[in-house]
Every structure is written in structure tokens, then in C-alpha cells.
Length: 218
Image (cartoon, rainbow, N blue to C red):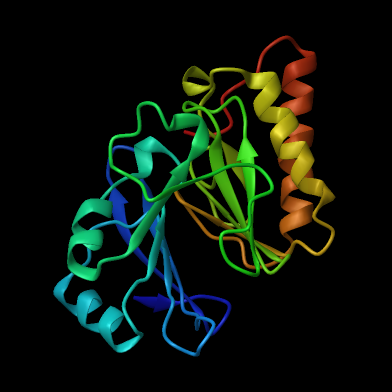
């Protein structure tokens, strides 16, 4: 796994040839109430032998958070090998493809320093976005990045409600200290996250005023 912009954040990826982007998984290395490892994995992809070994040296995984049903990925395997608890979006509770130990929705804080946002209008209901210590946003499907230095939107053909999707993204601008976005699909943005979100909203707003949300990604 590679270290990200914080010493306690790691990622591993798989390149998707049909979309020409990386699919990403995130590991937050943290301690529990009594100092024991209490790491959180988000949208976990399969791990290589090297990454399994690295994960063990970092303390394994205590909790898995899956942002939406299309990002279940290798959750079942990771849970079987680590005994981690699994959390999914509450709005998909009735039909989620893996059993969960708990469900998350807007405003929840499963552990201190991790706040949940619910993204509407995406291809699945109640997709989760996770705000880490007020500065780093971890997204699932709706917000992605097909090129370095910009943020993009899930293709319009996959949106269930473009206007609600736009509102969900606008609501993220209330996060005043936001500095980084780590998308589940595509390039991470380690700096200027608010500016990149504002630019995305402007592009989407202009397209909406023309009567359509034109494709913002290949």
C-alpha cells in the first residue's frame, strides 16, 4: 500500500481498463480507546500478498465501511480474514449484497473524527461520503476524477437524479476546512479541494441551465 498525504492514510488500487482510471481503497490507521489498533478500511479491493503483509504490520482492520453496493468489492474476504465489523449505507439496508453489522447515514460519526455525508441522486440511494477530521473527504461513486487536478461527476446516464446530485455536491461546500478529496474512482486531490469542488459545481450548473448535465468525464 502507498502512503497518502497524511502519515495515517494509505491506499491500494486496481486499474480499470474500460474507464482508464484507478479504483481506490483507503486505510485509516488509528488507535482505539485503549490504544489497540482500530484501523478502518473503506471500499476494500482485493489485496496482493505484499499488501496483506503490509496491512498486518499496520495492525490489520477493525472496521470496514462500504460507501455503496457497487463498492462492496472484496469486503467479504477482508472480513473473513480479519474479523472486522462491516458498515454500509442505511438507505440500501433492504437490499445490500453483504451482511452488515451496522448502517450509516447523514450525520453519523461511527468513530471520533469521521463524519458521514449522504449523497443523493447517484446510481445507488444514500451513497456515503466520509469526512476525516474536517479536512479530507473520501468519496464513493458520485464524485470521481478522470484527470489530475480536477474533480468529475459520475456519468449522467448513471445518475438517478442529476439535480439532487448537484445539491449534494453543493452541500459539501459547507465544510470550511476541506482541503483534500480521495475518490473511490480516479485521481486523488491532496490540495485545493474546495476550489476543485467549486469548479465542478460551476461546470455542472452551467450544463444544467442549458437543460442537460453534459458528460463531465470520458
